[in-house]
Image (cartoon, rainbow, N blue to C red):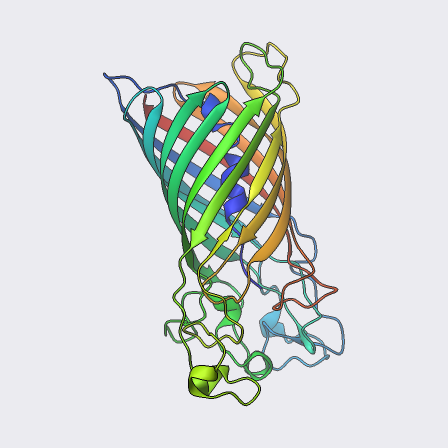
Length: 353
C-alpha cells in the first residue's frame, strides 16, 4: 500500500488565493504558519481481522482472539501537525513560493493479501514544494514547480509473517526499515513539473468564480539499472535481463510524466457574504509515481469543506477528504483497494503581504 499526499495540497488550499493580497514593492514577503489537526474517518481502519487471517500488525495472531498486547493497536489518525510556507513577490503577478505540507491518515483494512489482514495505523507523510507562480489574468494562472514527498513513519510494525509473504521487513515502504536501516524500496519520490489553472463562471464581489479547473504535468526522474540477480525473466541473463530499478523490481519503468487534474466547485460564488466564507466541493484525479514502483498509481479523490477569512492575517479551513485507489494496484489486489477518509482542520496565520 502506498501513500498519496498531493490531494491534500489541492483541497485544503483550494481557497488560498482569497486569503492573501498581491505583493507590492514595499512588502514582498509573506510567511504562513498553519497548525493542522487530522482525524481519521475511514471506518474500518482499526477493525479487528477476520478469523482465518493473520494480523500483520500483531505477530503471532492466527485467527485466535487478539492477544492483550495488541489491543488498541494500530491506532488511527488523530494528530496535530504544523505546515508552513514562505512567499516572495517578484511583482504583482509573479511570486516564488516554498511550502511544507503534512498529511496524516490511515488506510482501510485490506484482506486480499492472503493470509494477511492489513491495518496500517497512523501514517505520517509530508511534501516539500517550491514553485514559481504567475497570475496571467482573466482567470488563468501558471506555475513551474519541484516537489519531494516523504514518509516519515507508519505506526504498524512488521511481523515475521509479513516478511515471509512479501519478502520484505520494511512495512509499507517507509523511509526506514525496522532497526533503522534505510529502505531501498521507499515510496519517497520527487518530480519537476508545470501546472495551469483556469477559474471561470459567475462570481460575486467577495467570492471566487464558480469553477476552477487545474492540470499538472509532473516529470519523475528515475534512473534505469539492470540486475541479473533480481530481474532475470524467461531465462535471460546479463544485458538480456529486463530493466529494473535500484531495488530490483521486475518490469520497472524509468522516468515518466503523469498528468493529475482537478475540478473545484464554489457553490456560493454569486453571494455577497463578507468577509469571505467560501464552501467548496472538489474532485481530483491523482496519478503518482514512487521510486519503488514499476507503474504509476491512480486515485480518485473527492472532498468538501470551507475556507473562512478571520481577519488580521488569519484564516480557517476545513476539509473532508475521501481517497479511493483504482482496482489496479499490484500491492493491494482486487477486490480491495486503497481507501481512506480523513478530516482536516487547518488554521493559518499569515505575516506580510
